[in-house]
Amino acid sequence: MRIPRIFTTQQLTPSSELLLEKEAGNHVSRVLRMTVGQQLELFNGDGNSYFCNILSVERNQVSVHIVESKSSNNESPLNIHLYQGVSRGDKMELTLQKGVELGVKQFTPLITERCGVKLDDKRWQKKHEHWQKVIESACEQCGRNTIPILHPVIKLQAALTHLNANSFFMHPEAKTGFKSISANIDSEIQLWVGPEGGFSDEEISSVTAHGCNPVQLGPRVLRTETAALAAVAVMNSVWGDF
Image (cartoon, rainbow, N blue to C red):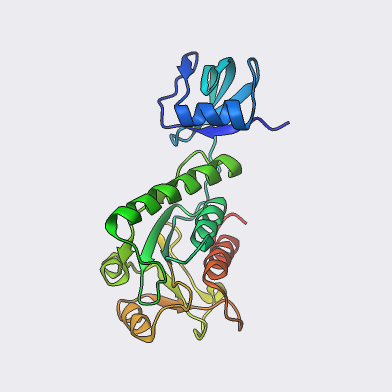
């Protein structure tokens, strides 16, 4: 039986006792219904797994004894930074979740002309906090011990200043696929994907003028969440660990 994995922001030290944070304790006691003596795996993003025994469970207060730590490197060899046009509903969450599973190391949500999500600064901040939780949960599930970076939401034109020579954007009319591209896999690889409806013609011209390389994934038009995940999978297959 697989040992449950829980993310925590607390400092973790082998051979020590720890009272879990309220949210983690509530998940262990009320959702997983774990009991004294059962094993738990904790991680805080430092690259290690910490294996624990549960000492006590009282409502949502759970104390554990950290038995040992193990270092594991299951990160993708590619440093992929996904610049994703914000999509509606749960599509953005799906992209973040599966992007984590596929090894993406950084995410930057983009506000573009066709972005269907309109929020004020306060609600964008709440959205960012929610997305951060999605990323952490995805790490719990897939076994990553390093938490990908989620950058603040940014407008496309401002984000274009971040472009490097290793940048690609999804364009259904592009003539080039990833198999014919030689990327510098020792540097950050940027993938730019539009929202529902894609980038506008003006945005495509602007992105291209900044040196971003257009690529396509076959003759079919893909939805925004499909395009991002398929592209990351292809890059891992061509240049990475697939």
